[in-house]
Image (cartoon, rainbow, N blue to C red; front, side, top):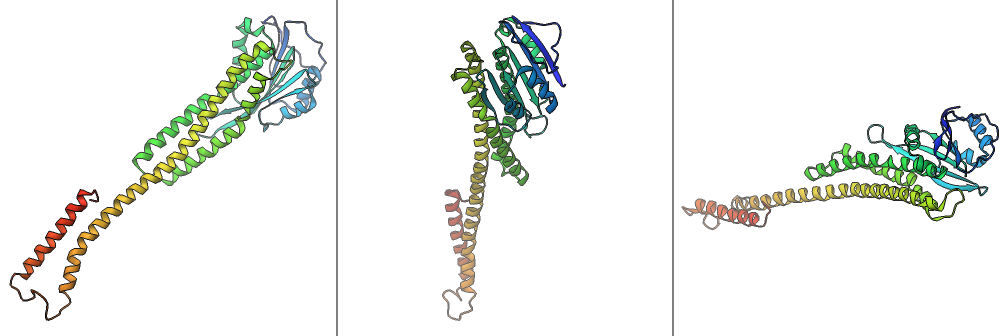
Length: 325
């Protein structure tokens, strides 16, 4: 059995020995006592032992073994709350990797099942065991602490993506993104859309824990889940903002490139207009007609050159004044 820890708590105090996970049905505990069992990557047979020992619902056990569940909170038999939460982290690069933590919450026990996540709850358990006053509140406080631990893991992820997006945004102002950067932008947008799709239901889970009357959650404990809800909403808002920023990067880059191309087009058009003057005059006097004005005039050549210089200079001054050159 891949049990990370299995302990009994009495008035917030931890027992000296771990619980035995042997599949024997347990008897209800007295007031102020509860069991907390944490397992990681269990097999079907190992989950069957937990199902029998804690009376877990078979449908909930089946969902706990599937690592692709969306976040949800369901009540089974009116006395057992089943919560699925999704973890998210970026171990390296910019690819978000997801895991799952399922929790079975009863009046005197909590069983957490971790799949595909490298963030173990052992450090969290050790921290909670030093806070006897809060741990004495019962398994609903532990459920809140696990959810808060999971949701807090979204913030470093958002910080890393936000830094990457800011760097791309700054480079876009200087030059149009190259194809590799554009592909990177669309990869990040796709990942953020997936983050919203997978983590988004966490908001509904927390809202249910805050607003609905559940026998497994004391009314006084709802304020704890409200704090988790606030953190979830903050992470989703940041994800939406980053997705919008990535979209604006492409639009801004396109507008800047259009502006650069417009400036280049105006410069080319201005020089084409200036060069058209000597070309037109030279073309006229190159038609070899015998009877043309000033053809035999002694100063005709210099007069034409002066005319060309005057017109071209006037056009250059005009284009310079309106910002085309």
